[in-house]
Image (cartoon, rainbow, N blue to C red; front, top):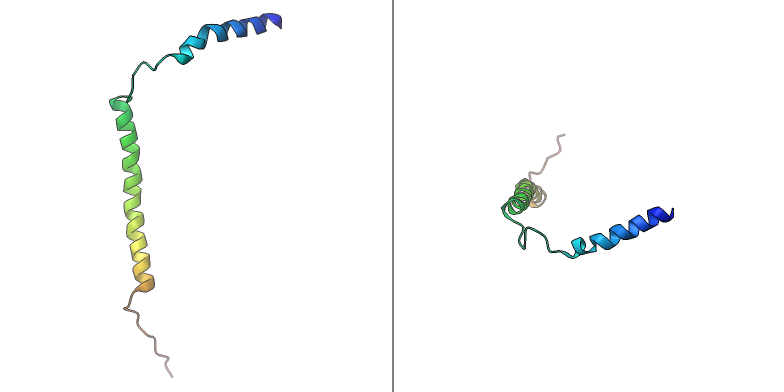
Length: 74
């Protein structure tokens, strides 16, 4: 058990500089990250368009003025 504990402490001591190092790609990420985020933004926008159109249709149906009155037959 002491051996495992010593190995763990040695690994933590040797890798602490790797955790503090700056990322290799630098600030901003790069083209692939921008394309990845843009792709998912397009998916969200393409799902919002039909939802907005459906909401407009529902509101027109609820508050529309072209309602016909039904007359009772005798």
